[in-house]
Image (cartoon, rainbow, N blue to C red):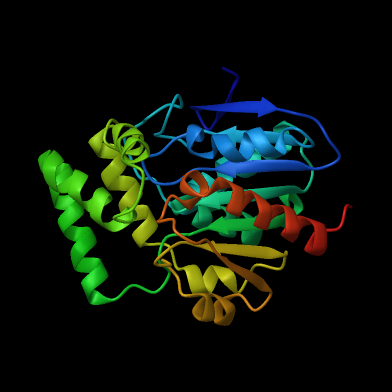
Length: 260
């Protein structure tokens, strides 16, 4: 497994495929690079694809300390430059959607376009904050039951495939609690609407059922966004409905992202 060290943190990644374009895949909270396997398999046939394990996740180092979205974006930019990807198409799921938005806003030289797959909620109500605080308390107390139920009930549909759900749960609940808690706090501190104002590249938003961010609000925050919505898939729609997601990304790239 290749790695790159940035600011003393070893970051693991996969580098597959070749082509005139490159894709850079960023997974979500307490997930790992395998959560983009269907997309890597699809796009690596024509393009170079990089899928990263964010710091604290997968095979990357898991140091103590804060895990803000800005640190993830800085790691991503460093890797993109080191690997010579030029302006890549950055694709992020959930928390990773926030990372690629921050990446585009802060490191414009690294990004040709972004794809946000059901990114973490930008507009948080008191009820959302209360729910997340309960989750944080459960994680820090080692309450696996509440942690598991939160993912099952709020990230999947009643019709979701049970084997897929168990696979997702096995990864998301296996990571260290200090990373899970700190990364969640970092995501909560992220000001999506404010960062969106700084994004100037083409953007695709692929919402799930129900969408974490309603498309009409995403269009207000990011006027240049193209909205898509998967059918019959919950928050992990890139795994539950990969053909739908891959097709939308293909169409977006074809129509909105010219080759440099």
